[in-house]
Image 1 (cartoon, helix red, strand yellow):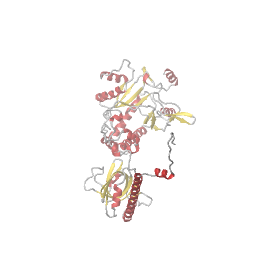
Image 2 (cartoon, one colour):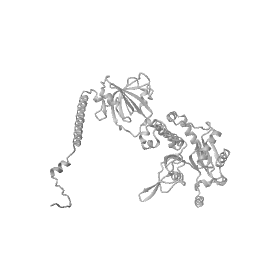
Image 3 (cartoon, helix red, strand yellow):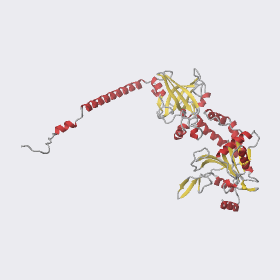
Image 4 (cartoon, rainbow, N blue to C red):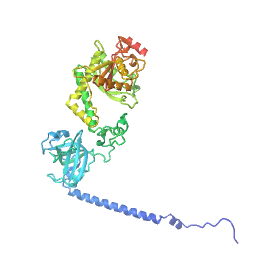
Amino acid sequence: MSSQGEGIIPNRSKEANDVEGAPSKNALKKAAKEKEKAEKAAKRQAQEQVEKAKAEANDTAKHLYGLLTASSPQPAKKFCPHLKDLEGIEESDEVTVQARVYNARVQSARLAFLVLRDQEHTIQVVIAEGGEHGISRQMVKFCGGINTESFVRVTGLVKPPKDSVHSTTLQNSELHAENLYVVSQAEEQLPLQVKDCLKPPSAKEEGEGEADTNDPNASLKTRLDNKVIAARAPAATAIFQLQSQISAIFTEYMLAENFTMIQPSYLAGAATEGGSGVFEVAYFERKAYLTQSPQFFKQMAIAGDLGPVFSIGPVFRAENSNTKRHLTEFTGLDFEMPIQEHYHEVLSFGENLMLHVIRQLQTRPKCKYLTNIIKEAGYSDAGNFQLPAEGEKATRITFAEAKSLLKESGFDIGPDPHDDIDTAQEKALGDIIRNKYHTDFFTIDQYPMSLRPFYTHPSPSNPDLSNSYDFFMRGQEIMSGAQRIHELPMLRDMMKGK
């Protein structure tokens, strides 16, 4: 008798399930290969360790190189803090230098070369097998493999090369290493190399011209993201040093004119400038602001009978604009002085100050040297400022005269004589002044009151104008100034009127 319905499902034994879950033949074969591969790699690594140990045991120069430790030999008695000092060293003198590795290469198993860099100065170092100190091939290999930008200490003999080394600044000297130690080792892969920062970034990144897609130089963003490395480029270093020179020249001039240097705070309880934003910070239970200028503190110093004062320090402006005219932070060279009879006393002082600073930059040997480094890096206009002849005054025009010059050159200045001069017109005015007066530096005087802050003193001869001025270099504003209202009732009225 048969029955219809569901079919019979056979039972599977545990053994059958185990066989079904077991690895396949291919998987077993692959695992065996992986095991064999790992065993070979381990054997090879062990062999390399043995060979390395033998090489180290046979390395007669292992005490002459490596990472700098407390047990490393003391440097030579003649220690040169800077590579430039090697220019005055006698031939075959033993010296010690510390510098960064700019380039490293192994020429052969017996010879390697390094190029060391200290700011804008470079020198070639020769590491050759043998010699009086018994330099080994292991040492040659080690030195030729040091990562660029590592900081090293080298002791050796200064010798003239067979041929001038054109790739270094010290072309007629090279250092034959006797020992070499790595003080600080750089990573093998750095986000940026100094050689990629030797020329300016593309003009497009600075807001001018078209981007050059074939430009091998590092982008502005890459430089800013890796500022420490980018700052090691000779031109960047020279710019920082030139800023130091400007501060020194400014300070010397102000002290010679009997100004007192003050150190104003860079925190204030209120904004110090109109027309630019402020950075707000927490000051315990109160609000404070990063100063937009040391204006309040200079005025307090004058009111405190300190006489003329000056300061050098950071200025903060919360201006979210990516142009050369808007900076969120810069270093300001500020001064304030009492007026005896007329505000042109201050204007004339400022003009003479600017002419003095620029002329010093153009004539001082150190400044000329630094400017030349910047110029050779591709900043062709560096230091090329046209100025009035020695003994002549700076070019000064009124706001009305500036508008007239623009109108004569075909610019539409509008019907209102008190309308401000825009950025394009300022730049064009720089070219007009240069062609007409043969100077890059000039001042504009007598701005309309409508364009100035409430505390600016009106002109006694025309209340629509102010006793204020701006300084320009190549058509770009670099300084503003004015006579401030010193009578409280007038100041109150001006505040109400604004």
